[in-house]
Length: 572
Image (cartoon, rainbow, N blue to C red; front, side):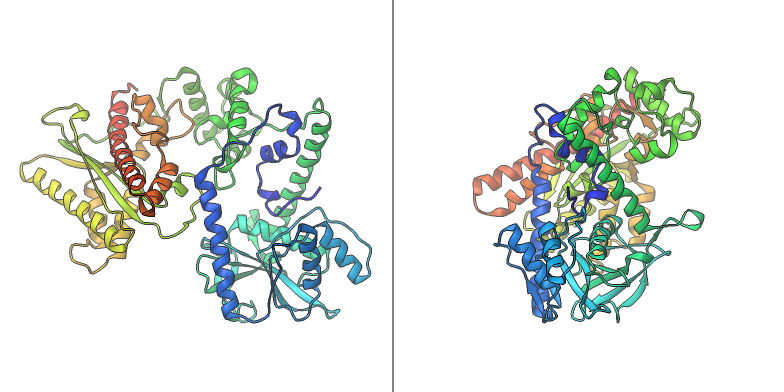
């Protein structure tokens, strides 16, 4: 049994299903999510471009031929690791064959590890005391690898010199998920005596002109008395993953010997949204405790919240019936009650709840090319994130209180250029300013509603990206616009417990009786439709994609109207 570099951060339910498939009769992976696949493909493309750039900047790069079979790649990896002429190795695979070959070449007994590693780069950072090369693992990522952190230090080196020794230090910590992969490599390097004493690890991130280094043995998490060695955390998580796999393999051989693993609803870029078994796990969670459901089905009740605040509670029924011991349990108990009754409740009934009502209510919703990744909580771009479509609806409530009388329209540009984005945003900005002036000139009150902070962030980007251009607001003007006119509905929604798994507009709109007209409505499909609109390969396909996006966006606008109206009708 060998685990790959993500073993410590994989969901335990994923490991369970992977290593105990016999325990799940008829288990089938979910259909490949085209957005997740696109993200992976773009990541591979970014990696290839980065290696090409490295080739042009640095001598001594040793490329292992990826057309060889697995065993041959591993043998070539072992040879490269002992080659004094190699400075950087790409395409390496360190598995059982590599370990056997290294043992043979070094005249040592073969002592297998339980790891398999494929670092994007292996970089020589000096010599070991026995004269052999000392290696450091480096991965290539498409995101910014540095998280803000005052308790840790990273070292930023230009790609042309790449080594950490002359790099400039700065406060910060490598991304935790990246660190777990690097820790996996580090532990295997240590076991094979091919690592470096200072435990250097690195990431070449979105900015391919730099390599960001850290001494992984010095990395800490937490602060004060709760500060802890990251490597210790990794080792603990890896041991847990090994135990999960061991129990799963036993269950796979004898399905009566249960591994004792319960499916949980997890978030983030390693969570349920990108998992190939999410449909199976969702059914397990809903059928848990004789159909009462697992507690992580409740909105914002994550496995981390459960572990921290009520670790002994697993089912929604238990949550309803248990006397709450802390604020998190009080909130979760309200959510559990709503899950059963299907009747929304305020999470804090002691405070007044009122969404602002005005004469002119405008709802806005934008479409940007990378929105699908935000929805999937991947939060890594796969190209230029471009705003290309802005929809709006204008409802004059002094004429009719029925929101369905609102005038819905869109502004769009599919040129995929800065000028196209500028045109959409400037026209939308001018339209909103025009409506504000028109309403206030006749004494009517006006607000502009949106869902989540996304829209305001893009107005800030507009002011920063196109600073100095005619008609572009200043940051001060954008802030005043937010304070005086924008109403973010999400904070209001989050004060209510709904019979839904999350607070997304896609989950709440059906409660309001609203459905999208287009098929497969969602950010994931919008990314693919946007690519079709830009492809230029088939005019009919492009026109169909543009029509789909326009209809989808108009319904996004209508959905915010519908959800707001629905909330206003609730009796608390």
